[in-house]
Image (cartoon, rainbow, N blue to C red; front, side, top):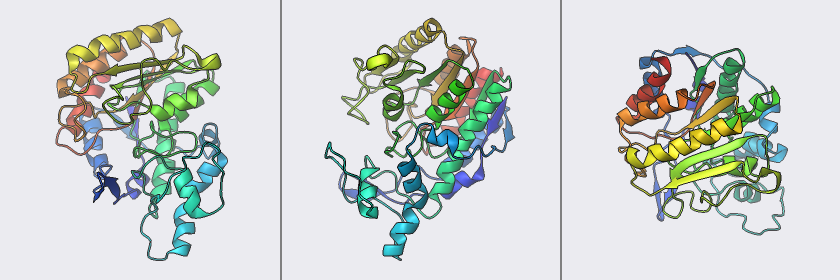
Length: 339
């Protein structure tokens, strides 16, 4: 089993996060990469360098002005403020008319949902190669692999078509799913991150050609708060093609497995030809966000259940933050595909 990663992804080194009125350390540390690399290696996977697919697959889901913003905003803002280290919003666009201004300050507020996505001088390199990593994993599936792992960082599932949030800039899992769809597949995105994949839901919400499923802590109790309810099932042509399976905060494997069974049954009924797993490892009991109480062994159980669907599976890294068991959790999950 192959995995893909590019060291450009370490270049995103966010220093800022505003939480409860205080500036705190951003949890998406570059050191996450070391723990995840260790986990993938211990699972017996073979590392490969991603291929550059260019901007077209990114532009299939993200707007041109958003891509330009991500690539250029740090340089443009620093031209105004030479001592600036990171770009962080100081205001947000809440007006439903959403007028788009050429001013950098206005664009920063327009393209951010929160303060968790600071952009530093080298962030765009990491963001770009995180998406290319997911696309290279998709190529591996197209070449006949039954399973693959894309170590993508920054994560992606909170990213909308032109809004960053929740440590996410480009929606890597959605980009990979759309790429596979364009190659003739009938994809499903199965999001097992502890947080609802609100960006993925929004991107595919009115479409019937990609099924989006998310298992997560109930948004009445947990980030992202404003999306992820069980009643959100799609709109227009997409009605019935979005499935949310929210669970109470603190849930363990006993509550998780019935929800996963529901998700896998829906995948089988949909007639999917490939599963893109938005692989969050932050449902673990030791994760800093403390949303669920899964154990390291539980991730092997989850991986085995997904493998048993007997479809090609592209695993794209989402959440899972700095804690001693992070690499163990990845090795446990991926081990289900290599056993």
